[in-house]
Amino acid sequence: MREASISRKTGETDISVSLNLDGAGKYNIDTGVGFLNHMLCSFARHSRFDLIVKAVGDIDVDYHHTTEDIGIVLGEAFSKILDDKRGIRRFGSAIIPMDDALSLVALDFSGREYTVFHADFNTEKVGDFDTELVEEFFRGFARGSKCNIHVRLLDGSNSHHAIESIFKAFAKATQMAVSIEGHDDIPSTKGVL
Image (cartoon, rainbow, N blue to C red; front, side):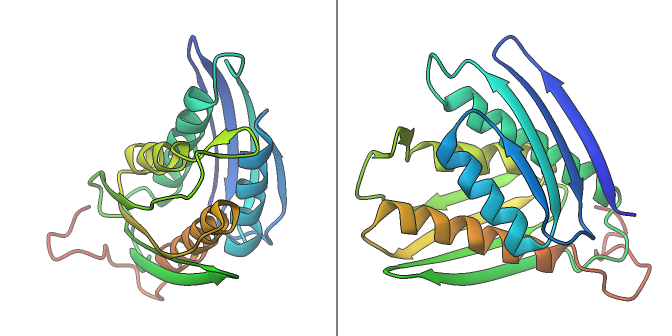
């Protein structure tokens, strides 16, 4: 089974993530941040990964630490499961529409952290969630998983739709990248990732 459980406790957050890459899209998400719960539920459902996230953070300050640290811990779960990346596709990409919004996410589980994020949201908040924190989540994920990730909002006026299309594209791109190719090779000319 390709699954892992990771916990991380700091002076700002206490987060645990359980991830099964060969699941059915089942989820139990409790971050203390309503909109982030919604995005992670969408990610699990559309990736078909089973995902449990429990987070307690300093949300009385704001949602920054909680959002970023969940990205880091989720990324660490991927890193632990994928290990040397033997047998996986490694690369994944998706372009996903949601009403007025259209998003592209491409990633490479290369063993190297890099984030490119291009999304201008029309509002500073969705509910009480700061839209600028979407980038922090993906930067955290890249850091934890040691992947390259490119996120581009191609179109969209509704910030909720825009962010949700990004998370759905993230789900499908990640699902593609971790899929088993039917070989036992490490997908690199270097022989190591």
